Each structure stands twice: as C-alpha cells, then as structure tokens.
Length: 280
Image (cartoon, rainbow, N blue to C red; front, side, top):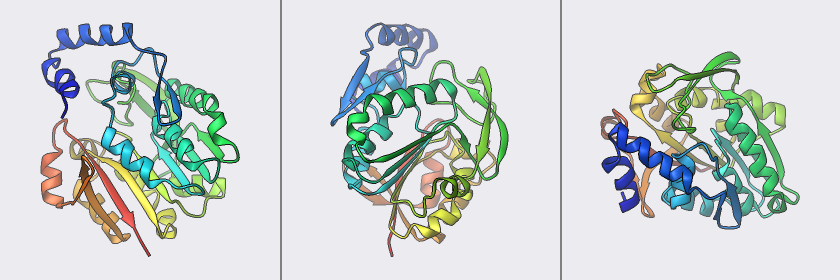
C-alpha cells in the first residue's frame, strides 16, 4: 500500500473525513487520464475509481500485468468494465487487431464506457469492439442491480447496507454471450463484479474449456462471494479443475495461491486480485 492508498483507505476511513475528502477529490478531478496511449475519460461523480485513477493509484500492478499480457490479435473480454479503464488499455495493446468485448450492467457506467471506447476510436482501427449492457451470471433473466452512490465500482446483484440505488438489468451467461458474438475462445478474461465472480465463472465453463491458452484476471473477495451465495473455495477449485494455475501478484511478483489462506485473508472488506493462466 503506497502513501496515497494509506491516506485514503486508512486515515480517511471515518465517514465525516471521507465525505470531505471525496468532495475535494471531485473538485480537482481532471476530465481524463492517460494510461499508455489510452485516454480514459473519468466520471465527475465518482471520487473512488475515478479519483484513484486521477491519483495514479488505481490497480497499478494489475493494469501493468494485464497490459503486458495482451498481444495484437487476441480476444479480450472485460466483465464489469465500469467506465472502461481496462477496456481502453486493451484497445491500446491490441494495436488495431483482434477483438474486445466489454460488459457493464449499470446504465451510468455503461454510457461512460461507450464514450471511452468512442473517444479512443483511433486505437481501434480494425479491432472488433462490442460493448454490451448486461449483468453476467449463471443464468439468463432479469435481476435488480443494487448501486452504491458513493462508489460507482461497487454495484452488486445482492442487497447491502451500503447500497441505496436500484435498477433492473438483464442477466445472461458468458457462454451464451460469446456464442451470440461468434467468440469461440478467449485469450484474456478480466472479471470484477463485487462477489458475483462465482456465478460468472459457472456460466463460463464452456468458453473457458474451449480457451486453451487463456489468461484470467479476477477479483477474489471471499466475503462478497459468500454474500452472493457462492462458496469461495469451490470457485478456486473449479478454476483448477479447468486447468488454471492460480497466483496472487504484487509489484511484479507472482505467488501460487493457497486456498485456505486466501479465503481467510479476504473475509471482511479486504480483497485480492488473482491471475490465472491456462495452457495446453
């Protein structure tokens, strides 16, 4: 944790202090930030994700590894794309080749995702780009998306005391969505859906089985998985059964996961980003 992260997550944790800090962040928030060649438009109403991007502390290690993994011609899928930071980085790295599928259910985030993809269209060239407003799950239907007004990256398909807003969203599986878009395999898959990762992965088994050389980036938050009615250890075992080697990563270093330790470390509000790779 660097100084900026410590200041925001620890020093500013009390609600009155956090409210003042959020107001200050929004007052000085730039309209966009550069990540490589990608010019990411920020959300002027979101002090958390956009604020962290502006301060240069938003998932730096994760974005760095994600960027290095992508090569021109790959198929990249961004689940829980939010405003499109990872998606625009993918466009930069694809160099006008390959395919990007960006998925985001919340209307406000999706509109900004579309703006970012359009704003960075010079990076797309011949890259096929699909932006889809849907919540991925293990089944198709309609669900209620519970929204956090203070953090646009903390919307969930289950209720929580932090979540005040609601909107109805369509749900479907990644298997069905890939079939609709003609995607037969995935090279890079990023998932960040606040505890619904278990349901997303259960609805992705066919496409993952077909993706012989797949790189997986996903947020592992045991507390959120439990609230979403998933068993955290079973999700990790599912990925292992599909042939993924799983690692935690920090400052450029990969460490094989220990299931029991990882689950214990991510109870409460703490989460860890996981990197998985599936090879033939």
